[in-house]
Length: 496
Image: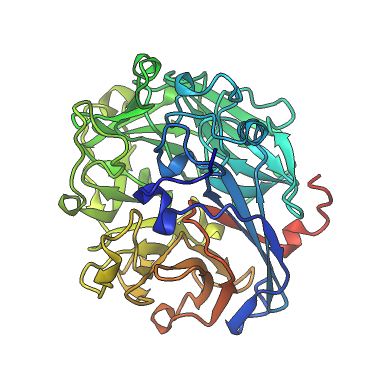
């Protein structure tokens, strides 16, 4: 049987699987990487090892392939390895894909692994291990130095939920991992669990409650005293899955919904707030509270972004009909009774006039009043090489610094045949002012078979990169990653 991927948008161009595991010591660099950047940028891509069993598939169903870019004294080296999930090992044994519809175990081959996760959404270092996460299962732990897969990670038996978030936060004051699970008792359940796990890996807090229905909660927000769970109007139906359908289905008549939980409370204390209908809340930039007001900043789109999860009649909006902006949601908790929250409809206000996604803040200010954000932005008026055909999914042609207080934006446009993957922010020093540092992001070249990792001064974004780090092959589009300073990784041996 020949091994050939389908000629579909999900497996060509930016989305053509790379399947490359490698080590490259001292990547070629154009410009100069500041010597004060010391640490590792870990990131992960859904990168299918085998062509889809059913002949077609979505990007999010690819196997997790982790990249580690190590910055050391102006040099950068790369290590790349697949997460050896049960799912991938079963495929390697049979030398073919064994998995059907995305997050639908009822469509898998009988030889498929029981654990269906690909561990492909983000990677984050915590308590001595690198966690590879996808929100459908518990994480896999990796050795942060070698990327060797250590196995499924339940935090030494402390976390018993069926799933786990792919967007945990680190409390900057104490290093605690703030995290949650939705569909926490299995597919289609409305159970949600919130956890706080300290820097040594000890479970400090566990709160369980139910949502009004089972729906996607891709990201969440944290403040000093609250956590906020955005339920996207993508609902889950196990009967639909058993009939061979999608895990998620878009519900245009449902409101954007937010559950607000006090961090020192219990499941009975959750308050539910409604936003406008038919809206997609994206990733959280940051959130904070002042005098009883919770401020949550995140991109919001006026409809279903995920064309591969249509509504019941199969319809999806045309991309040009959708509008997207960075928005601020304000939840006023002053004197508010729990029963009154659901009677309100919260209207967000825009912080930008342009579409953006994959937002990142200076994470020393996670959950605190802040000013600076870094996003991928799209300006349709900028030149685009029409010989490339249609713009691919997740196309962003600017890397931008946004001041959420003043509204000022400083952005870099790399050219008419380039686009970005998610950025990270690296402080210039541990005590540098908020937002003062470097922005690091992968830059896709749509005509070529290579990728660059670019480094920009966060205070001079429009000036472009101060360093271009050359990756001598093409990286598939990734999802998320995180920065780990060298001093945190030092002393970590064999991931323990």
